[in-house]
Image (cartoon, rainbow, N blue to C red; front, side, top):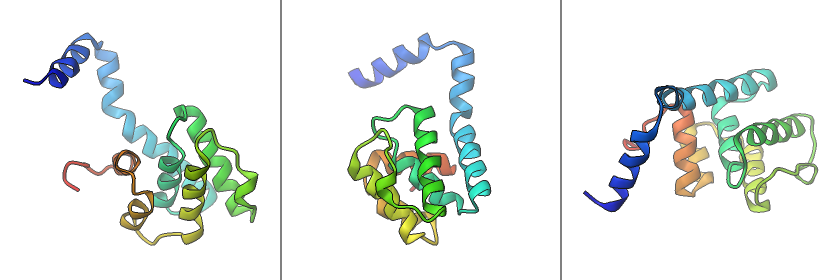
Length: 134
């Protein structure tokens, strides 16, 4: 057993049942929130989740959702990327905007735009896919 495995198991053993239960539903809850935005703004779910994933680096979850909604709303209202000030890197803001501009037809195309392994895995997990099988 590696040191990484031991560290993960040690942290897991400290978790309460409530924390474990919350962890088991976190991605489904995230997908539900993205679906609400998608429905309200009449956008495809995979595009909304792509924007959420792109804006996620260095962004707290609640702020990530706010930033994603603000960007989605700006886009659907005919605004410009410069009007968006998410709490992440400019490069990630621009990547999120490029997802909106290209309006990919499927989730695989969104993942291609995201490129980075962490944000791509985050995207797939919110979408409900098992990243180990992709």
